[in-house]
Length: 307
Image (cartoon, rainbow, N blue to C red; front, side):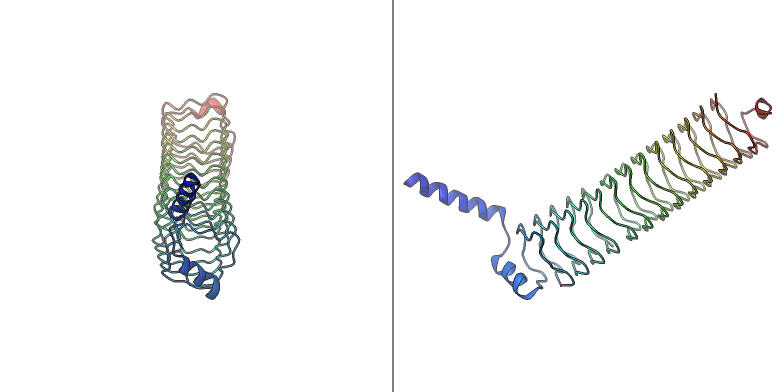
């Protein structure tokens, strides 16, 4: 009997630890539909409708918000660290200055969300829809964006060092001066993206599509572009030194004055591209195609080999 009582007491104690929020605040939220600055940490709100309400400054750390409708909700300065937001609807929600560290946004809808000044460290946005999101200047280093829809997103000057962006959709995204060094963009869609002066050094872009992308003065030193689609891309003044362009398609691309020193150009396709004043010093190019390419004043390269 004493053992049973002890076990019951322990279960209650552990339950209180797991759900640290204020029960009165939880009831207030469910009754009134608003609870700014409330303590809601750890509670389970599975599939609830909290759209267009005020939860600014609320503590929702560790809360279960799976499938919750938070569209248009005010979550400014809220604490959502370690919260489960899988498949949540956050369209046009205001998460400015919110703590989103280690939160799980997998497959969530974040179209038009406001994330200005939010802490996104360790968050998971895999498979989420973030098209048109404004993340300009944010620190997104090492964050997971696997298969995430970031088409048309504002990402200029954003820090994406070693971020996981495999098969992400970044079509027409604004990535001017963004730092993507060491990022994994394997199979990503970057068609018509603006990457002017972006840092993509040592990034993995194998099989990625950069058709029509703007890469003026971009840093692609040591980048893996094997099998990448760079048709009609603009790479004038770009640094591609020691990049891997094995079997890359650069048809009709502009590579004028580009640095391709020691780059691997084996079996790459430069047909009808422009390489005027480009530097191909020590860049091996067996089986590469240069038919119709503009090769005036190219350094380290003998155009007569392809006449």
